[in-house]
Length: 272
Image (tube, rainbow, N blue to C red):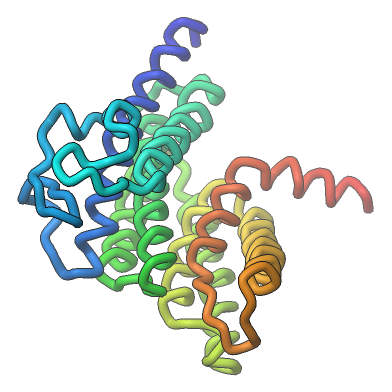
C-alpha cells in the first residue's frame, strides 16, 4: 500500500474516531440513566444549556472554551477530550492493524477493521460507565456480543477462513468460562457483568490469534487490575471491602493484548 494512501486512511480513521469519541461521552452519560442515545441534542449537565454545533467539535471546542460551559461557566471535565482522543487513537490502531500494516484493502480487511473499531468504541463506553457507576449494562454487553459475532463471521466468510470463528468460540469459552468459575466460587470478587464481558473479550482475542492471545489478555487484565488497585487503595485509603470496578482493566488488558500480545507471547515462548 502506498505511504500516502496509508497516511490518508489513518488520518481519516482518527477524525472518525474523534467524532465517535464525542458520541461515546453522550452514550456513557445517558445509558446508565436509561435515556435514549439516538435522539435529542446534548446539554450541559449543570445548566441544561443546549450545546450548539460549534461547541461540540471534538477536542477543539473544549480547548476553545477553556474547559468550561459557555453559558454557566461550570468546568467541563477533561475526560471529554481524553475520551475523544482515546477513541481516535483506537480507530487508528484498528485501521493500521487490519488494513494499512496488513496491506489489506480488501472487503475482508475493511470489515474486520470496522468491527474492531466498533468493539473499541463500546469498550470505551463500558469503561466510562463502570468507572462512574460500577456497572456493565446488559443493554451494551449483549448487543456487543451479537454484533461482534456478526461482524467477525462476515469477515471470516469473505476471507474464506472459517477456522477463525472456531478460535473465537474457544477464546470466548476460555475467557468467559474462567470468569464464570471464579464468580461461582467467589461471588463477591467477580461480578456477573465482568463474566459476560469476558465472553465478548475472549471472542475478539481468539479471532485474531487463538487461545494464546486470549491467555495474554487475561494475564494483562489481572496484572493491571492488581497493580493499579493496590496503588489506588494505598493512595486513597480503603480496605479489602473497597469496591474497584474491574471492567476498565479487562478492556485495557484486551486492547494491550491486541497491540502487543503476539510479540509478548513469542518472546515468552522463545525463552523455553
